Length: 232
Image 1 (cartoon, rainbow, N blue to C red):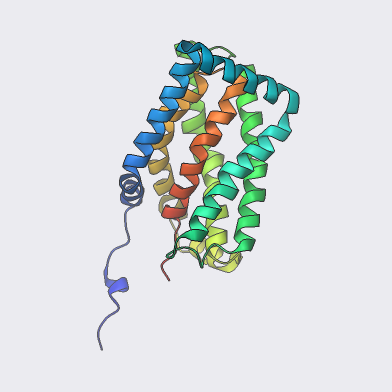
Image 2: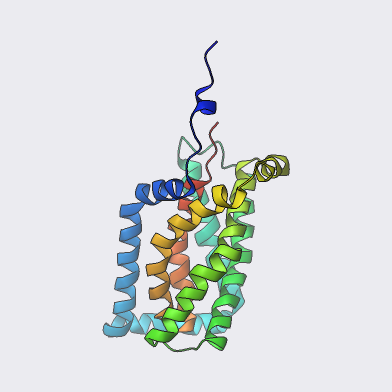
C-alpha cells in the first residue's frame, strides 16, 4: 500500500506561501501600484484631475461614513465576488451566501478603516510631511495589520472557505503554529503590495485616503482568496 504523498511532503513554510502568492500576483500588483502613483501625481500636478478629486472630497464630506460602507463593500465584497464566481476553478466555492458575507464583512471594514485613518490623522498628524507619512505607514503595516487587520481578514476568509463551519478552523488552530501557518503568509504578501500603497494613500489628504484604499482593495481581496484557498 503506497503512502499518502501529502503525509510525506513537509508543510510549506509561511514565507514561501506568502512569496508564492506575491509572485503569482506580481505584475498585477505592480500595475496597481503604478496606477495609484499616477493618481497621486495627478492630484498634485494635474489641475483637471485635482478638480475631480475636490468633487470627491466634497462628496465624502457630505455622505460621511455612508460612503465608506458603500464603497468598501463594493470594492472588497461585490466586485471580487463577481470575479471569483465567474471563474471555473473557484465558482463553486463562492456561493451567493459567500457574496452576501463578503459584502457585509467589507461594509464593516469600511467603517473600521475610515475610523483608523481618522485616528492616525488625529494622533499622528493630518499633513503629508515625510515623517508623518512614514510613521503612519509603520503603525498601519507593522502594528495594525499583524495585530488586527490581516488577522481578522484571514479568519473571515478561512471561515468562508470552510463552508462557514467553525470546527475546521478550531482543528487547524489546535494543530499548532497557527499564526505562523495562517497569518504570516498573508503578512508577507501584504507587505510587498501594501507598503508602497500605504505610502501613496497617506500622501493624499484624509478624505481621499479611503477611496484610494478601496481601489487597491479589489486586488487585495483576490490575493487573500488565493492564499486561503482550500485544496479539495
